Length: 392
Image 1 (tube, one colour):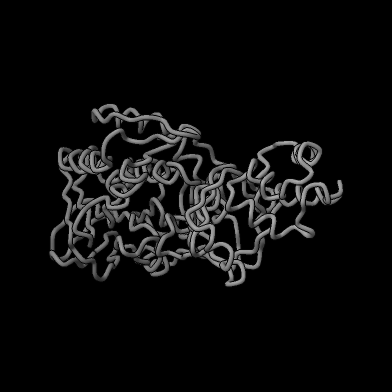
Image 2: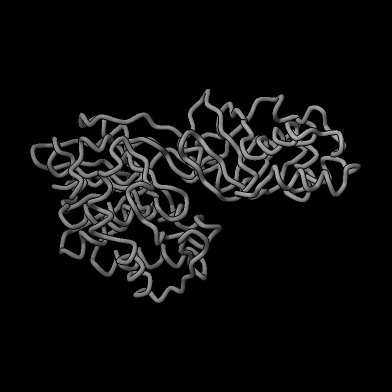
């Protein structure tokens, strides 16, 4: 049995970062992952450019039973700290919309930098190595692996969530939490496309591939970004964002008005062209294919001169508040993150250590902390991994 100081389960963003920080303290570290390559989610993120953080990191952009739990780690290792790391690696980057930061080149640069830092600090990386039984004997943890058993005084669980199982995602972290008596918050897919019943899909399929600018609302939460019609329903950044707040049996509202005076626009269009079809006027506000669908919803459909002020206001309201009822989501297969996880009440916010099990840490996606789309979840991985790495 090999004796080390820290065993880290999971070679993703949080696990690698925790390993680097612990190894730099002189700790003997082994990072173990059943995948053949490290940082696979990093590699595919941001269209292969890695949206590695966001300039707008704030606690209200994270979902959790206790949203303020993440604040300690996020304040102690900030987006600016990680940007400094990226600069130190010599990786060029740029800002896109809404504070999102991406590499100029391939995301593999980030993976290579992390694994290089781990090796330089003296940490070991065991890839393609399945994990078996995990036990706690007195004050040390024992982990059975395909390369033989390991023993350490600290065990960091950085196994991620259930999202994108084809990338190797499993529920191991949740199993270990339950094994050691830590409570879980219900898990479900997050940042995921929404699906609809067949009667909605009948017309949605005709719009598949169509992107439209607007906003989507659920309760008091609203995201103004692009939306995309698909053969299964709705996707695009705004939909992925709202999916983390939506629950089954609830409607969402699309706002295609973008703050415009829609009633005034429609009345002016009627006065200028009373013989115009409604879809022709709507095509000046939204893409033509969507304008045709909206015309079908209106009763009566036009021409413009036949529509009363009340009818025009109903059309304007439809554009501002188009109610749609999803029936589900595409699930973990395409979800970017897993909502829920290890209950933060069971963890020390400063160190990520389990309050009831000294030496046991949970970091990254396995914890009940989920960020918005746009680099927030990577920052949580860096910050929580850093926090555990300072003490594990």
